[in-house]
Image: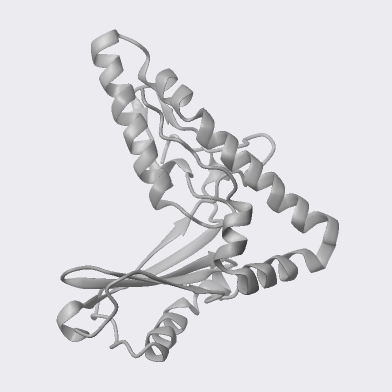
Length: 219
């Protein structure tokens, strides 16, 4: 945490997840589900596994709206016929959306000296879709290759890591600008209309804003 400037530690979004044991819901789904606009402007998910299912939701907002997430998640599970989550398995985390930083600190540093940050720790979360798992895997791969290069080629691992992240940072910057352009010209109507498009468009809207395919660096 000492790597991050103070103004970069404020939350942009929040996610909550809980566990449902597979034996408690043997007839549960065997493939992932997404639930658009639950919570408003965000989405919920249900990810099945062999021994458990992960149920959660996330979105932008404030502490007041985020405090209602446990009740929203329980209500969502009731609506899909799922049993209550296992007691004590609720886990929440603030999510730093990439590209949404102050002008004097446009993004979270990717590391410092011999420390490399990956995934959420580096703010690698898509500013529109909230997607983070892919970028966590990709940044982890880039970090591992940078460390290996430092050991074998005696290069600076942080500099090599930053070079390998160039495509990811460019994608985040484009998405953050697009989000800003959608919000600002419309004034107070910007966010409601954006959320309506997210809710009505669903996966088609996500594909439209998540243009292009980010390739995995080979080196």
